[in-house]
Amino acid sequence: MTSQAMTLSARTDAAPLRALWALILGLALVMAQGISAQARGVPESFADLAEQVSPAVVNITTSTTVAVSTGPGPQLPEGSPFEDFFRDFMNPEGEGNQQRQRRSQALGSGFVISEDGYIVTNNHVIEKADEIEVEFFSGKTLEAKVIGTDPNTDIALLKVESDTPLPFVPFGNSDVMRVGDWVMAVGNPLGQGFSVSAGIVSARNRALSGTYDDFIQTDAAINRGNSGGPLFNMAGEVVGVNTAILSPNGGSIGIGFSMASNVVNNVVGQLKEFGETRRGWLGVRIQDVTPDVAEAIGLEEARGALVTDVPEGPAAEGGMQSGDVILSFDGVDVADTRELVRIVGSSPVGKAVRVVVFRDGGTQTLKVTLGRRETAEGAVPAVASPAPEAPVEKQMLGLTLTPLTDEMREQLELGAGDGLVVTNVDEMSEAYEKGLRAGDVITEAGQQKVTSADDLEARITEAKEAGRKSLLLLIRRQGAPRFVALSLEE
Image (tube, rainbow, N blue to C red; front, side, top):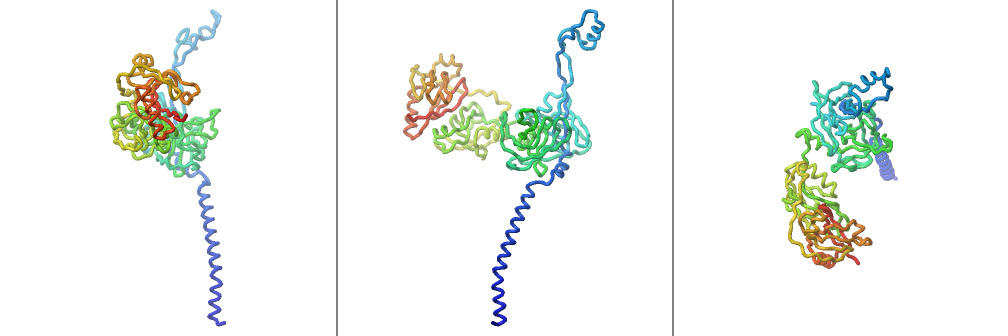
């Protein structure tokens, strides 16, 4: 074999070996990257983050003057040498129950959001306070004044005056936080001063009791005194305001709730600009779409917000009708009523928005100019008043029904309008299981008005012919509307 042939043979034999080494090195690189990513996911320490954000976190102490009732002093024998002492020092206002004043103090937390001294905290921390003192990480203290509050989200905006720019922290985007992300809480737990705790996001979009609730749940230790303090992401941005805990004993058991920063940021912007909130108002009453309701109206899936009533207001002016299902609001898909309320509430007053509704088996786009909720919460629904038919009882769907008369309308304290009054409900029926009771009024069936039993029978027939398994009824009880879907199967 020539030297040239031997050289070629050696190169040929080495090619698979080089490929094998390349594969091994590639796998090693992938493993190293995985280990590196895992190491980045679990911080070695939160010390740098704590040092970065602590100067902007404050302790809040409030003082409130409260009146207390003092009963009569101890019963002493007449002429006792202690009689004058207790009269003069223990009950100086005289005998009997008297009103005295004392100072009550409360502790909480907050954080600075701008160098000119705006501070965010919880409304319940400063509510009814006469004096508010803010203590900084450096030990410096300043008096604060209230700029505005929002009890609905339990947020308050304060302001302090400082000769020098103050350290502050920015808001982050709470919507991008994922379950399992690391977070850090900073505050004044149990009045012990600045304290840091860390954990993860345990859940998202929690609701407690408020209309606009959007809480991040975390297992970072949160206790009394942490209220109003910030919940940080790993970039040092505020993603939540620590507000509440779930606890059987008053201490942290790893279930804390922080109002999401995207809600807080919107509220703070309004409080800063107007000193109050100015939430968008659509002007509808709504309920969730259940699977049986979706089937009854021909909606492919149970989603959106079902409109039960449209009083005078923006929605009525925009052409919205009772029975519409709101699927999209201002370009955002609507999953349920809670999401719609939150989206509308965070929209600017006076904004013209496009609302996509499901109606009569198809979708329509309406244009609605939003009003302001704070000035419209007492709006009264508009009603019509055609003459009812003579009362004739009829039984169907487990209900005994009769047309609504003026006398019944007065007895049931109802406004003007048509409908069928439920005079009895079969306790073995689906209608009873779904909450219908005597005194309820059916005003619509199959999203069409009913004034007589014949109307209801016609709607039942139409639904069966269309292949529907259930019929959607609009029920009013003491004026409050809701939709109920009843099965048409025998």
